Image (cartoon, rainbow, N blue to C red):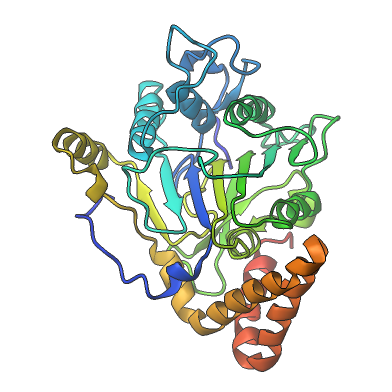
Length: 381
């Protein structure tokens, strides 16, 4: 639920000839807390000192508003976000903002590649061409338990922010809220929207996804999570349809991205540290904040990098061979299918995956069993 109320080692160079390097697209995710933590639903976001023009005010998520407080702090231009900072600066300032408001949750950055913390923050990278965005806010209106108050506001303030960063409304921005007028964030609709987000992705695209709602955990029955639990998103109809598991999110949003595509995600929910199962991560501990300050002072910030995510490595090593073949075949099929436009790309990708499944039946079957077990564990009994 979204509640109402590691120390970083010395930088190391990983062997990138193996699993993580097979992910072609660049994915970055900021999560509101570690897997074992809950994330706050704030009754009055005015405590974060945001300008009146930034969003609707009222309630909101602690993670979303800590991020906005980091960007909107220039008194001379209070309604214009100041985003000229490194990822390290963003993370440390978000942690500081949360601590000042007495929130114990610790923001976390995860990535599909071993990014340096000195990298400049961008929602839309300078070289990006097309944009596409999905924003989901669930207050669980009408539920007997677990009702939230700020998730719709989070979506509205995040929409305003990404528009200031080059994203546009229209048919390439989808809003989902249980507010009676937007598309309802049911499990089926969210899963369809995630597939829509990556359906026509190509090199040079900048994708964005923001989720504000409940996050939870279910028992990991496939044995590939170090904690023993899979992280989940909780759709508005979870009591009937179940939850959306991190394994499915990874396979749907991360694996299909081609080289040159970028995705930035903000997950403002509980238990969200590894909700996308990305291979690299870093937690903003006090020790990390001190290391960042020292590195900035002596010019060595570019030596600080994200660390391996042990859960991803366990999962990848178990199914390494077939996952590599599937990713390669899907990419090749999509490339061949470009002559037929978006439909051709989808058909080519599907043909590539099908070919691998037919040629490597045993490995593909075992991977499918693990994913099926995790997904079934998330469904309502």
